[in-house]
Length: 383
Picture 1 (tube, rainbow, N blue to C red):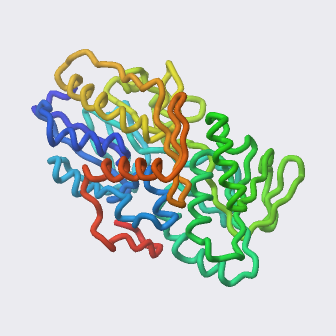
Picture 2: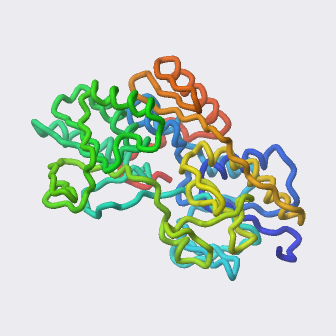
Picture 3: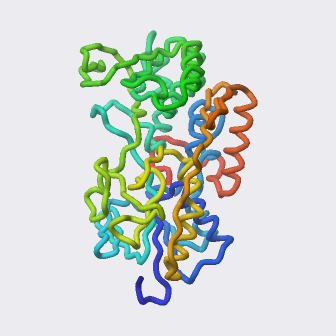
């Protein structure tokens, strides 16, 4: 800890955990400290509502938190800058253009990107979401309309890939020329309960979305996906919805990382190599257990992070984060229905969607949102 009267606590990234941390900062006492939030964007998405934004059920503004306003309300300095590294030995955050920001305590909640199974220029990722939404509004609709047949391929059949496919089907349901393809090496929702897999597979069949199972993409040649078994699938547009992957900078820092590049933390969300650094959400990986990369866990980590930063400032012993044994999974079907799964409980229907909608709107009601119409997604920087 620094000998400064007020140590500097830097929150790097505007993920769910940090957003809730700032809300707690407004309501709970914390030892004197200077708080700084660093985020590459003023607006951060809430993952639970993004399928609804894609399908047209929500506006982009309804599904984004205004981090600058939230920081101001929390008496926290907001810095809009891209994080490019951490000099953990010097206690400095490295920002774009080489600028450096000192910290006494650092918490990292920058989220994840996606595993790049291929590297082609015309492939659009669903993370970060802003470029994807820009592409979704323009030029994709005109590209579909200008063709008698348009094949849109989605690589990845986890929850993200499935929800994106269903949402796109709903958004462009009036365009008969659009054919949606899901490409997967492991099958639909691998790792999810069998009953949920069957529910989703039935929904996909009814909506005539094509699923290409056991299709492991080996290469791309002239707008054609080619599998390791030499199968081929021509496409007109390609979306990447593969599993979570970290940015490259953590593994290039002095912080201890997993073989995949996620920041390794102990049960208290504390870096195993640097005790004044915390990590949470998708960027973190526990050394003692494996958690799915899910916003559900990021949300539940906020109270533990808040408590442990307070204890760190007070010189007290930290407490462990204890994830729930069965988390609630809510998957949008994009047509006014949703699928719920928790332990033995599995259900699908209109009431599940209303339940999900209520949960999502209640979560977002805690935060300041962008002004209506402020997120046009015209390809320019969204503040």
